Image (cartoon, rainbow, N blue to C red; front, side, top):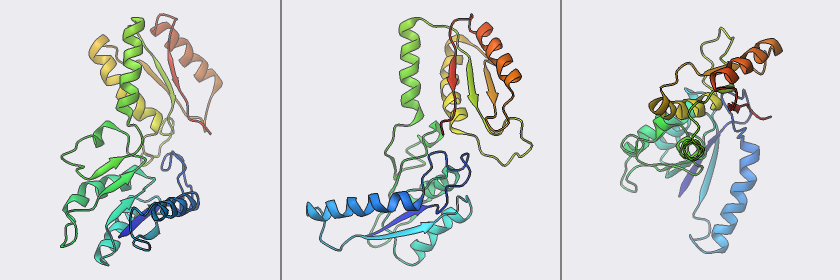
Amino acid sequence: MHILFPLPKKRGKPEENPFGIIMDLAEPVVDIAIEEVYRRQIVPLGSLVTHFKDTQLSDAHGPNVAINQLVKGKLDCIIGYAFVYALAPVARMSPYWKSATNDGIPVITSIGLTSNLDNRTEYQLMTRITSPYKVVTRAVTKIFDQMNWLKVAYIFNEQRHGSSNTGIPYGECYLQMASLQRLQYKKNKMDHNYFMFNELKHDLDVLRDSLRKASMLSNGQYFSLFAASD
């Protein structure tokens, strides 16, 4: 069985690799996992062949890494990707990569947590091993329901904010907020209740003003703060 691990060699920008997944961190873990699989005799010794390929954190080169392996006839499973815009097209196409030995290529990933990847018809063979944002959304919503909190304001880091570069992808804070906001709007019809800042270009006066507005908007009692960690 040929297993492809499409990962970047370099960490790159946080907006493209928010979880800091790189090849050097993944390889030792994979080696230990394969040793354990053989030790338990789950599969025959030597039956797993791993291929680590650099995706360069590119939505163009990243999918081609998988396609090249497919053309070589050395692709049975994909585990990885760090950049969601490289993952999504591969996860859409992989059910159609059929051959005499497989009925499509399964994709296993720890990213792709947004609700637009929940569609099992479109992403038939993708498995996410971490909880998608909808799980966090349900948990937060239940807390608000239990506490009878009706108003909420969001303050979060977004590296697109204040930047003229429209090519910067939306950050994880924005995507999580968007998931929460949809449900909150259905219940309370609150609109324009979020404030963004850029941690790379932060301005204390602007942040202080956003905190004040958020406090007033949420009755001066509660607000949710999403900030990127180091």
